[in-house]
Length: 310
Image (cartoon, rainbow, N blue to C red; front, side, top):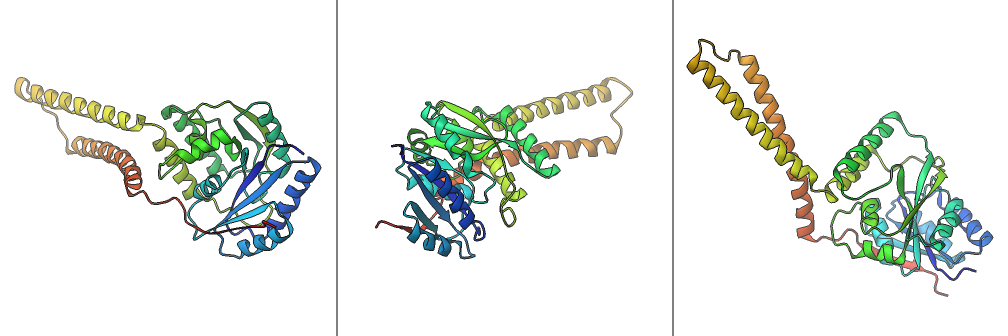
């Protein structure tokens, strides 16, 4: 058996129909590859998923349950698992079996070669057109604005060494974009490609609104460029406005012509008002995150932790 203790951290929300199949496949991977593998479920379900996990803990000593008081977010659940871990490396994966457990040995193999972070690129994944479009737009905007590189088409399924996840644990920001946070230090990383499966059961809990929230966290948590861009736009608009005023005065005072038309004024007002609201929106996003950090509210609250210590 390998000496490295590897812990799987799996956030769960209403995955009652998936848990047994997930444990069965992970158990096969653990046994067939002789891995020192541990499994931690971080659960905030309201369908009894945590009760089923507690039953399985009695049979499988390598399973642990971290039960949260209520649903916070997937990222918060992952942070709860990371903060409670003492493993040599952790693997973060979804509970819906879209992240295939059979890929776990591939991540561990890259880790043993010296990678502090092993990312999983989705080789094939069925997405609706709208989601795929906005995903491409997000990565394009993110790479344009951010100072931290995040590879395209890479999700939360990844391995982090103890040094890598200890750094993530040290962060005190209230809103954290995990994909960017783990890449920010510049630790050595590698990428493997894996075919992503369809959900084993049920519907996705990750809707468009939550995806948009994660995208905004990624952009505003790892870049000040939007603020600088808004200042540049404001300065440019002020400059153009002054030019327009001078032009109108010169026409009126020194020629027989003047700038006519209420329509032109109305369009200009709409344009400048839109720019102002855009700038205010950008500033508000930063103020919102400052507000969260000042309040210092925890990302999650643990109800209890259960494991088989016998």
